[in-house]
Image (cartoon, rainbow over all chains, first blue to last red; front, top):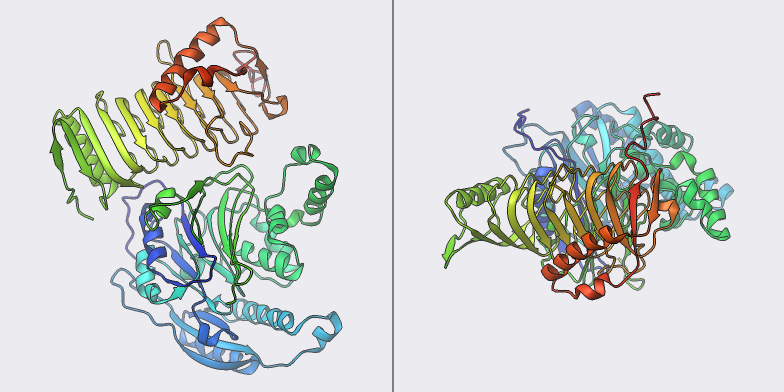
Length: 370
Length: 258
């Protein structure tokens, strides 16, 4: 691999936007936005998440899987055939890119669990959707944990992540990101600091519909990882950010927290600030810190995460990484730098720097069905 | 990206369309113009290019239209720079002399390690503004903020002056200054138009009333700021100000050494 040693001092770059009316746009805008912040990365990782890209298969989980070798592929496909009903499978379309010398085999599978409503669901009173989601999380964990050389990097419905080692424009070119059309896009430009720059370690990190891109480092990774293991989530991708994807799934989907409260768990108020709150707020914030102490993310971060209904931006509590938000019409933008937003929307109605620890939550309009 | 700038020389000004020009090429063009004796440089369609005006050491005039990138005016000595738009993070990093006027807002760490000159920001600023500012003899850096400031304003401040007016700000419910104001501060002075609760201040700091010397300094810089921003200085000065200074020269003297 050829490295560019004449590097700029930098950090990762993130960008994302959501069309709240659900209108879908091609990947060209997000490629231009993250591309403007090229110098925030160093060519060792980039990726995109896109929502609304598989309308023809929207009832199936879209598994994007990378394989290091054919043995991994064979074992994984056997496993999938055994446990899932497979509607369609194919190579993820990609182009040859001169700067990407080697890449894993990338395939996608549109599938759903074979089994009907299970005993577990009956016992726990889960809906069929919840039961299926739980089952798919287990499938993803099983492949990532137990099949060497196979990594599921996307597993949601009607959405997909595309990522690898390269600059954003290289990865976009490789995965033909411009050919997809989505109502919500996020992107990442990576400058790995203390974890390897490999294909599985590029952002976004995903589980089910959750995707996350992150600038910073999660120094609480060890605590978060062990906490997640108690609930059956296994961190296998060698990068701190992975924990955030699973924490979101646990806190919001499984435990039913709102996005606001989940963000408060990830970036809780300082104890001394809690003391100054009124009684209700005090109780809530104390409870969050006590119950979800192990979900607290320590260290610097600016993150964008998304699910099928919305895009959320969040900073660490002392704002150690940049994050800007902006609005134009039905679109809400968030990025590391204002210029990355201006390059795709010069005449913004409103631009602001969100307060540290306060999430910016942008959702599809309630009536929009996707 | 190549440096195929549409260069134009209109009257005495050197005008440049920065659209799509890579930051290194743009800064080379600026430095070349400065070295060629140009006194007035106008940059249009700037978007995200870093280090603009960086290390320029002549008192030229630089007008920027658009959104300049990180570390605007870093290590700058002398120019009069005006930004018609918002600036990003790291404005006036280690700046030495000159003036930066930003008509919009600015991001985090404005004036990091700033040694001299002035930065005037019309709107809000981000976090850690004025961190590690310092002064020496006649070199006293000044930051005037028309809007509000985030946490850690004046962190580790060793000298210089920060003025927060809290006038032009969005969203409105934001507090005048953030928490941890002046944490580690051991020199310099912060004036805030309004009140700052004690709990927001770093250890060893106390809000104090202004004396006549403070009033004179405040009037001088706020008047200059308002002139640049086209605002009414009387209105800006008409308000209760507090002064925040460290109560001793070495508030942390006993922390590690004894």
